[in-house]
Image 1 (cartoon, chains in turn cyan, yellow):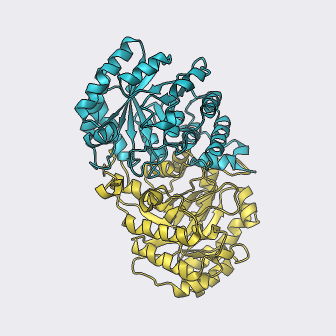
Image 2 (image 1 turned 180 degrees about the vertical axis):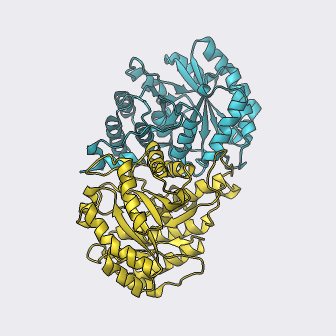
Image 3 (image 1 turned 45 degrees about the vertical axis):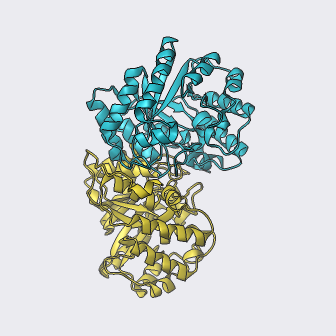
Length: 314
Length: 314
């Protein structure tokens, strides 16, 4: 008999202040699939989204309107959104890089977008082909128009905890860049450890810097990659600092095609296991989710990097 | 350029009380290799131990005197110890199950042993073929004689956070069983999550129960498996509770042959990455250690499960 049959993990609420409820921002369909070497057929993506909604996830980042030349894996964004069986109570944000992308998103009926900025000059130049100031010049009309159209806007901020070209990233710099996105009209900032190098003290320090700058913790989400195995420990640290929106990817799919050694996102299943043990509500049925990731792993032809998926679907 | 070239992780000491120094109890040569399907040649094991000492590890659990019928992978314990190039300042504890094993260990010149007990009746019966009381009856003369001979004795306590047959394990039961091992003469207890199901709140609760029972935190070590991806988050939680001895396995080798879905130990490299980021001293040279695990992975014919090893040796 395996561990799962006896109803583990044991629920033991932490003695310290932790959020009672966490919103899981599922990025697998976008951040996961954009990094696959092969293009996943649109009907598989649609089934993936359906199954993730069945599992109880309430925020599904569905696709991206980045130019298909850069992300051919998501070139089917219009077709996907046209075929999407939207559920009540489920949000389907999409990534939008610029005004042209926003136009495509609006035409497809999108109500929730995310822009993708860099906390460092070097990554802005590598990823967006422009410096930090030009990055904001590009986002300003996108966020402005989106807000005018009544859309919710999230701002991703990558390389918040280390940059492969610049090394350490000062917390003050992350806060300064983040504030510009918030001031522009982003309702939430997702602080990304794009190359997965962050450790717990750094997570504390960056979140404390935002707090000291007067940014409410509810405006912050965390987005960790597991390149160095730190993603869940960093997430726990962020929860302790009051963060209650956590980005993760079903089965641990994902990475970043423009940053060396960036491997998968935090696996949603590994996060759910921890939240279950801590008695923190999240609304996800772990068995349905594991079944979904196991199914997707078969479609992709390789095992899921999620430890929970491997333990429970073996 | 990869992350490593610019000296990451960024060191940011945590604002909270954490140990300034951690003793890493390296279990790869024993807990790792005893779970390999093939028997590793003794000369490879000796080179592994040499390289681990070169990497700066100061406690190397070298082998086990469990009957070769049960653990044929470590049947070469005498030959290994005879060939061991002992270093000044490095301890080489070995696992000893009973009086016969102790006799073999003493004959081989061992100065530091560990006994391996269960926190639950069910696992004691499955792993040791005897109940909890019989388990202690077996250990008592072993620990007594070892102490009389001037040996250091560690007590492993498995299934402290969940048992595949019993489910949840009450913290009071773990403390009661642990106390018996300490009272018997064990200098340190290693609290094992043998099936890797523990989450952070439970780790806090078990450590608090030991504290409330008057057991000094210096007498405790933690031993986490990464079956559900929780090992490093749980370790961080234990450090925050004052634990300063952490068991881990180079490259994440290991598991438990008698418990379903028990996969690898916490990888020493992933632990070192976190400790480095937190500014906690440990004495290990990460590059030498990664090189060692990459070399061993080649010998074993499969990739290391450590994220850090994969990121840095790719």
